[in-house]
View (cartoon, protein in one colour):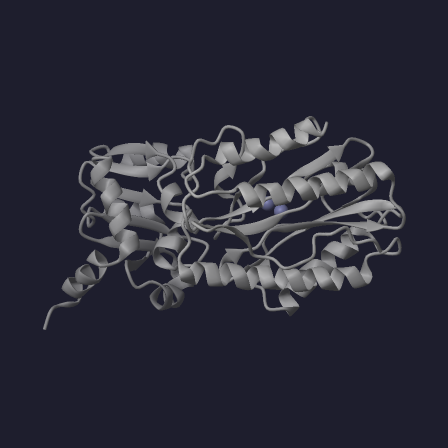
Length: 367
Ligand code: ZN
Ligand code: ZN
């Protein structure tokens, strides 16, 4: 009968996620990875606690966390050895129990500079090699299980939107609408909001990331509602713009143009195309319609365990869109001090094209 360590190593060699990270070790000529991004660690091991560091060598893997998660880590993690630390992972590494080798890659954008300095001082024989984007090409492609969780989150967001149509009026404040979103997210089974809901009416809708304010929904205006929830760690992210009262011709025209731009983005998305190419198609369309200046952000982004993942679908993104990615298509028109419109769907990209995940209506809803 093999001992436990042998069994664990056998299990690890067939784990596709650890295998992919080990191939990167080889490619980068490193002896170990020190991973500190919680979402990346969750993707790799399934661990959902708020304190974790993953050490991955060519032969083994350890997950460092603290006593609060002693039971949870055992239940969630099957492909790494859980280590409960008293004084943090650095003290644990100093014990010399772990075969770090000589070159250890770390997530340069996810490890504080002060900690890097400390590691360099305490482990002088190790060369710490800063790396960014280690996970980018891995997390962008969703598995069937991941897609199911994303779809469940999107389905809740669709239901929440229907609830909002019953309450949107000049008699409710933006912040009350945001509270309803958070409430219904949980009532429909989500763990939490994916981000603080954006509810913006009147001229405030021209601010793409406006927080819900204490102002009442403005009558005769467009209301931008951007919201999402989390199911088993996976996010939804969706925007609809609704008219409350009578809106101007300029608002109506902007809405119809954003809708056209949004549908164009879905139609033109192709596996293998550069993210910036897709952004460009929609950006050029809006510019041709005279809204070049009014579209002030990127067309979209990948979504998964984090609401904003790589790649950004933006003007400068050289990454190609792979089959199996889930991205948002969210063009907008923002006229400062007047109004704003945005329509955002998450889409699943396959060789057959982009398939929108939400079912909430996109025609102009006038309340
Ligand atoms: Zn959004
Ligand atoms: Zn988004």
